[in-house]
Amino acid sequence: MIGLAKQLVRLFHSHWPFFCGGPRTRLFVSIERGCSFRYRRRITVGRGVRFLRGAVLLADPNGTVTLHDGAVVCRYAVVQSAGGTIDIGERSSIGDFCSLYGQGGLRIGRDVMLASGVRVIPAGHTFDDPTLAVVLQPTTARGVTIHDGAWLGANVVVLDGVSIGRNAVVGAGSVVTRPVPEGAVAIGAPARIVRER
Ligand SMILES: CC(C)(COP(=O)(O)OP(=O)(O)OC[C@H]1O[C@@H](n2cnc3c(N)ncnc32)[C@H](O)[C@@H]1OP(=O)(O)O)[C@@H](O)C(=O)NCCC(=O)NCCS
Image 1 (cartoon, rainbow, N blue to C red):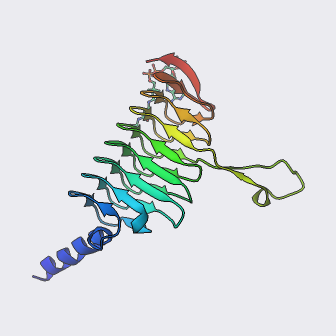
Image 2 (cartoon, rainbow, N blue to C red):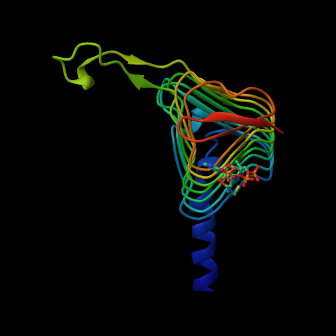
Image 3 (cartoon, rainbow, N blue to C red):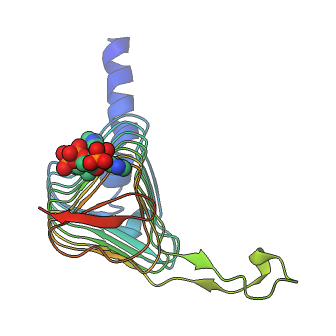
């Protein structure tokens, strides 16, 4: 009986952002243990979205996070709006330990796969004045778009202002500094196009 009570408490705890009418949700959202959500009213979650163990979603007063139907946020991934908009398309998966930020806007299309440890940072610092600490100089936030069907291998880093084309592939460990066209395979740091699919 105590076990059952504990289970119910756990169930409520892990689902409370949704029971409390926080994010605008539809049916069948699943949230594993250890997930956390901030500014729940600014998080929108579609049908069948799954949050695996330890996933963290951080919206804020100026930023929103939207996950469309069937999207998956895997273990310990962090999705943080940071004053911008993050939009994750239908059936796209955000791998374990990914870090996604939204400063300049992050748009991820449908059926996109981000493997474990991918980092997308749509922001940067300028450092034109060498006499000033970088932290005191203006920031940039141009935004990142990852189009439908793209696959980013493990530990890929995507820098601000970049777009990755439809069905493109980016090799594990690459640093994407320039746009990757539709259907291209890009590898390395900086990522270079090595062939078409
Ligand atoms: C990009 C990738 C898809 C290319 O696969 P492929 O077309 O089969 O390429 P190959 O293995 O034939 O390699 C072609 C060349 O690129 C090199 N290469 C392949 N992947 C590379 C990478 N990520 N970084 C640097 N070089 C790479 C190979 O060493 C090889 O070089 P060579 O011709 O000098 O020997 C694959 O290497 C990759 O990175 N996959 C991601 C794996 C992953 O992250 N999985 C997570 C599970 S979702």
